[in-house]
Length: 137
Length: 113
Image (cartoon, rainbow over the protein chains, first blue to last red):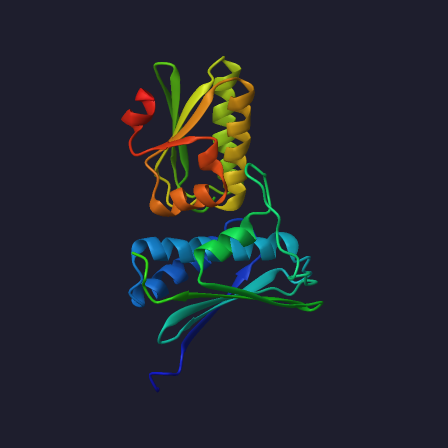
């Protein structure tokens, strides 16, 4: 395999309480393999949790699962959460205020990862998050 | 919950120290809230949440902590956090909790106020 061909892992997560933790265990192993430090690993895990929870709660999917993919690139880790719901308007940015109870998932993901993009349609949403190789601990 | 989760509480002067072990999501957050409500019902209004053994708090878990902060404000009490991992401190900062609740390095510092 060429050094430039990303190594990929995919897993299926059933929409059920705490199942997001299964994905974080894989995320932890992958991130550690890429030499991310503990703080960075935790940031990746929390961003992934938020992405999966958003898919669980807001996708409106009749298919009771999400797909999670990890792609190890030379310079970054790519984490994808794919749901099979109804999509949403990704152009409308969340407007959050201090002590607001909900709506922080997207803000957290965007703060914890280097890049966050949504590819969304009435057939589902593909959340693509990237974390560049260690600049954090 | 599939992972270990435990909430314990003890009195330390005017403070109730609630120590949490494990991942704080919606279900775990509700357990922390139940413990908090049990003590407020007895008249306590100053709280320290020790998260030394908590690795992650998701946004739903944080929303429950916000509910606790608001209740201490209503009671003219206080909420402080201590022993936070960097990821939790960062989460709280992003979500604005640190404007309304103090963060301490250690439980002893939190109790000393």
